[in-house]
Length: 470
Ligand code: ADP
Ligand code: LRH
Image 1: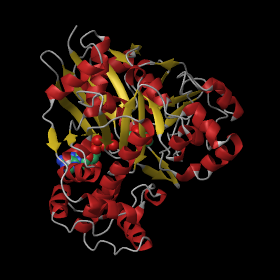
Image 2: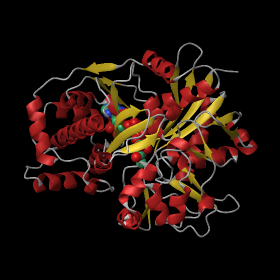
Image 3: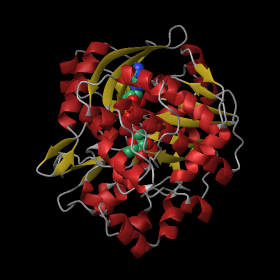
Image 4: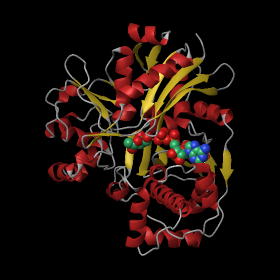
């Protein structure tokens, strides 16, 4: 058996097929990277799922033969299959507005307390539960979350991997099984939810036509198919006293716990208890993340990220900040205009240049990280001595420094491809090459140079900035 594993990792801004070699430590190489983003058709926002699938095949062909393949992606979104297994319509993007008002309606019908007690999930307007209620299900035989849909196309086997199923709002947070009574109460067809599978379990062999197309064959293995579950599994922590920010399109900020926190205070703070590897709980909150920056860049054609970051580091601190989680920032659109409007609404002068906008976005995100981590500590009672910042955002030195300063804690930055590490290490463990989460984490720490940022600056200035927007 070879010690090579392939990870298919679909992020909301880019997808990649990565190759890991565990012959001597852990080496990661990129086989193929491709852009990902929303496509608006007739007023509805979709993913280009077939385009993504084609890129995945290109990547697997380039990666060459491996021992197994794991697939992860962003959470909550899904495709519906009919009785024959054909895809019914293109998967809708979680930033589409079809779920407008649904969460409020469900809370009224079922009760927000009951929903939280069953699923332990934060309320985000796009949770699968709300999308399904806004969808047409009359022809649907099976609902597959995005990584499970890709796995189905690769192998012909349908199932629901549990870490990602925990983001639907329809998984019981205590038993980690489908919440049948809730599903029935909502009038959702129980039959569309496929059998659950766990990270490390076999999905199936590649379909013969897929193997012929990529030129080799290997089994697909379930991993932490929610990208954030894989990223948290690969946080290079050396002990339990850590918080994390998985920072890409979203910043997922929180702590890892042995069990859920389901208190009224936790619900009021909109903290989520998502399923992690090995029965752990990812106790975290979504912060709007680098989406704010991505959308600014889209509004400034021809701008260069590294030039802007350099310029932003010389900008005046705390000139303007916003609450990054204002719902107005969620849909695609003119981000600088929305930031300017938020600044005006909170009595601040809007930034005047792109560099000043970037400074505003990064300080606002650092404030979001600080607030989420402080609340995670308070609500869970977990001690935190260090913040691990992983994902593409760990390449952003200014953001790492600002996060350390805002939190008053050291930040250890990297790896940027934490999700991929988590994905391949669960496969390697299933192959008997790795033992437990601690060993996985020490392999990641040894595989990547990590950067450490000590907190500095004026804590009072961060308090003052926070008081403007929270
Ligand atoms: P996702 O998985 O959600 O698509 P990633 O984890 O790939 O997101 O992170 C993408 C983000 O990382 C980009 O939007 C960008 O802001 C940031 N990023 C990536 N590379 C760099 C870099 N070299 N310098 C600064 N920021 C970077
Ligand atoms: C990050 C992520 C996050 C979800 C969001 C939909 O990629 O999976 O954990 O909340 O996408």
